[in-house]
Image (tube, rainbow over all chains, first blue to last red; front, side, top):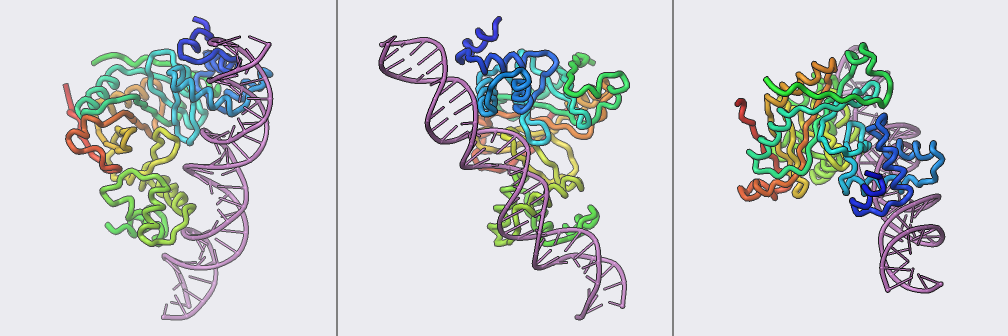
Length: 156
Length: 156
DNA sequence: TTTTGCATGGGAATCGTTCTAGTTTACACT
DNA sequence: AGTGTAAACTAGAACGATTCCCATGCAAAA
């Protein structure tokens, strides 16, 4: 589906800034960006978009469910396009790289804990912080902002 | 052990501001506080402590392992005294209440995911956001800043 | 085409947090 | 107990991230 249609479905007019920002977030190489990152990417493309607009649009996208906002360590928000499948994050504090994973067993346990507490869960997040030295050896780390995805083994 | 001895063991001089802040964090009723909360509590006690000192001391305590810093939704840091046992958090976005739980199965799965990735984990956090309507019924919600702890069932 | 209203851009304002400068304090050693 | 020195303190300025404000722009409705 076109970005334009995505926006309209979310109740947002398909304006140029919104289309550009959505386009940037959809580039597969840069799944996790700060508002500043998005702003710089726009400038690099020669677009005249204000930083305030970037923040406003990202917040609107979040409300509309188009993007997910993360509160990683360090205080600044990181945005990622929402492509449906929930996943958790592993963040390398040395190179800034972010890996994703999904573990059905963890999800199920979380669901059950909430149920036990009688708590209605709107959203949940799981972050692991550390260093990807082991991954470096395999040549996956050190290229800043790259992203990998891992599907955890299902059972046992 | 006395707070003063705790501080010295952590390599920190036992100054008045540090003792007061540690004392506040140790009060069982208020496990999760922002720097601002701690500052206000000090003012209420009639103490003359600067906000900058509160931030500096909390950061020192974090480095020393005396407190844990959380990055909940909303961007501001929340501090909690570190009493040894790791646990995860359930945050009610309506009343601000924070509940804690520990689920060994989740911890084990996380450990395994990191292992699979060859990732060295320094810290990890799991937050669930939502509403505690169900808990309200049992009279546990609505008293702002109160905290409950739940031990998740072990197996199955 | 005029109206109406949401969207934008730029700069000022705000918020949480950290830094700076000068002053005070804790603590080891008389 | 008295004192020197490094560490810690306070207040306020500075800072980075984010939001607000408002005059202008633009696009759908009348």
